[in-house]
Image (cartoon, rainbow, N blue to C red; front, side, top):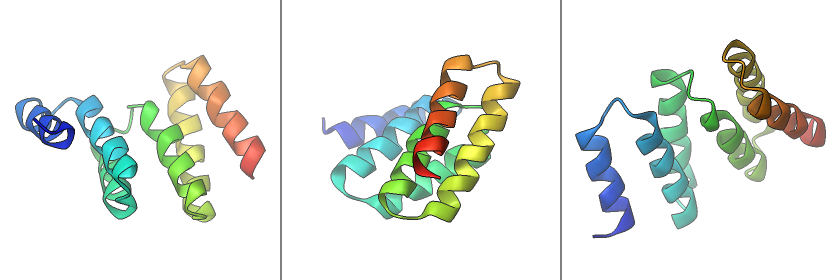
Length: 102
């Protein structure tokens, strides 16, 4: 079974597991489908706002695509979520991403 099909099946089986959507966003990016990846990352932020890995990966993609305004919003939201969730490693990484790019 193709990787993308496997991930689609996982989403169907566990629609409340944010990790499956995260994998799909990364897979779409890997395939070069940046628009599809952005759509899935946007969905992740809305449906699972406390899923911290979303923020760094999404902001990194946006920076790569030179969508800095949206990337700034994603990093700021990620910092807020990481502070609420006491996720010190993620918080540190998001702050570094901010400092390096903005």
